[in-house]
Amino acid sequence: MSNVSIDHPVVIHDLTVAYRDKPVLWDIELSIPPGKLVAIIGPNGAGKSTLIKAVLGLVPTVAGTVSLFGGSYRERRQMIGYVPQRSSVDWDFPTHALDVVMMGTYGQLGWFKRPGKAQRELALRCLEQVGMADFANRQISQLSGGQQQRVFLARALAQDAQLYFMDEPFVGVDAVTERAIVNLLRDLRARGKTVVCVHHDLDSAPEYFDWLVLLNVRLIAAGPFETTFTSENLRKTYGGTMGAAIKHIEHFEEDRLAISVQADTKRPNGH
Amino acid sequence: MVIELFTDYTLRNVALGSALLGIVSGVLGCFAVLRRQGLLGDALAHAALPGICVAFLLTGSKAPLVLLIGAALAGWLATTLLLTAVRETRLSADSVLAIVLSTFFGFGIVLLTFISKSENANQAGLDKFLFGQAATLIAEDVQTMGLLGAAALAVVAGLYKEFKLLAFDAEFAASLGFPARGLSVLLTSLIVIAVVIGLQTVGVVLMAAMLIGPAVAARQWTNRLGVMLILAAVFGAASGVSGALISVSDAHIPTGPVIILSLTAIVLGSLFFAPARGLVWSTIRRRQQRANMKVE
Ligand SMILES: Nc1ncnc2c1ncn2[C@@H]1O[C@H](COP(=O)(O)OP(=O)(O)OP(=O)(O)O)[C@@H](O)[C@H]1O
Ligand SMILES: [Mg+2]
Image 1 (cartoon, chains in turn green, blue):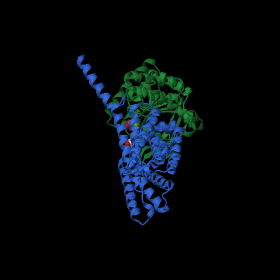
Image 2 (tube, rainbow over the protein chains, first blue to last red):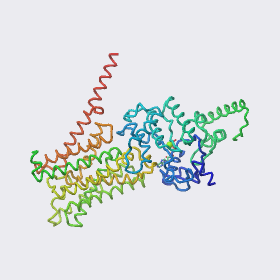
Image 3 (spheres, chains in turn orange, yellow):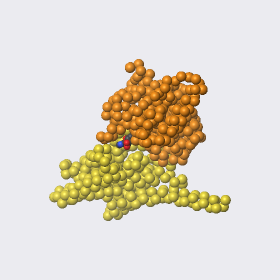
Image 4 (spheres, chains in turn brown, purple):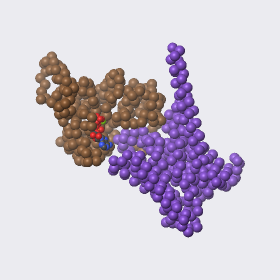
């Protein structure tokens, strides 16, 4: 068990979170293997953002433990990056893109120390990685939604973490930015990092991610897409009425069938 | 008048005191405005009144430090009540704010009336805290204000990066390990200090404007937080000094309203004429764009 939790970036045991008396997450048992792109999927109000915030110690928990690389969040903070929902901040704040990205280095800087040349250069490199170098000095309110999202991603890159949590990084971005973000996520995976994203689009999920967490207050299912992304599980997550979700899954299952016939590989069937 | 500033004892105290107030409330007001807590300053200022009265009733002293401690404790109590009520009840923040503000202020007025009716010969002058009377500033007051102000500004300078992060994205700050709650309490305490510095000059009723006005005006001229803080300090000091000097020229004018009027001139000027965000220029730009469209 302890072996598992050390090389597993995230191990959640028996986690329960409530706002006032209303439980929002109930008895979550989850462990996420390293080097994966993980999608957290579930309906509105399922507790997806809350799950991330609970793991990062941003909301109090009622019960349960969270271990990150075998330690508490306090101990592992420097290894963890966070991209909050873009709508969670006021973009009319008097600052520019580069300055926001530099905020990613504040954790490593610690108290009182001001960012200097090294932090500036790191932030510029991170902006380059998301294709935003030309906008470094742009006031943040004068960025489009997609550009703001990229600035947030660059800020997380500046944290230079091993494990990233991103809350809906694809919301409100155009196709070009969406590709750029996907490439960035794959690049992170290639460098051995684990990325956990809240995601809403069932269409693109199997293409972008390789591990799935289905959540609706309780944990419905978690595992590789091949075995977890099933109509049965989606029905349990969204309730029986979610016709559209089921259609996505049928396509996915047909595709998978076609692929496995072509490749003539025998995969264990998930259901 | 300029020469008198350096020679006349009263004028020098008034100018120094109001400049100090302008600088400190300008800088701290920026954070309050950016965190959308402008009204918090209002509640804190109004809450200071009962604090002053209780401090006077308990000690019988009108020494500035005694009254300031009373004001600070009351402000702190009001903030704690406010934040707890917002967290623990379903009331919205602005309702809680309104309740706390009027309760404390009402209590303060009752105490003030009680004091002025009592036999205490020392009582004259507490009501100057309502609208401010800069002419009553003595060197000792200015020294106390200077110490408090310097301490507040030193904290802001030391924790500039932390406060900026807190104001922009408190949750991210917390995820980096900065105690967002603690920083927030600290920032509020500094605002209490600004309020305390402004008690004698502006008074409790109009103090909130002294926090919000310079910040709003400064935001119009710049997109950088550092520049905004400096501009707000300059605007605050300019309106403080000009207002206080005007009011001192006639002892019947309370200082607070005059300071706020000169501050209003700066705010209006900034809202209309600041280059990028000013209403005048953006209207002209829109007209031109429309005209260009028609030509094409
Ligand atoms: N600060 C809060 N106070 C009280 N209740 C909250 C708070 N934040 C969230 N909730 C409630 O907790 C539940 C889960 O919220 P959460 O934001 O985690 O959902 P989500 O899965 O991220 O939803 P969405 O897809 O809409 O982003 C919701 O019912 C929400 O109303
Ligand atoms: Mg959410």
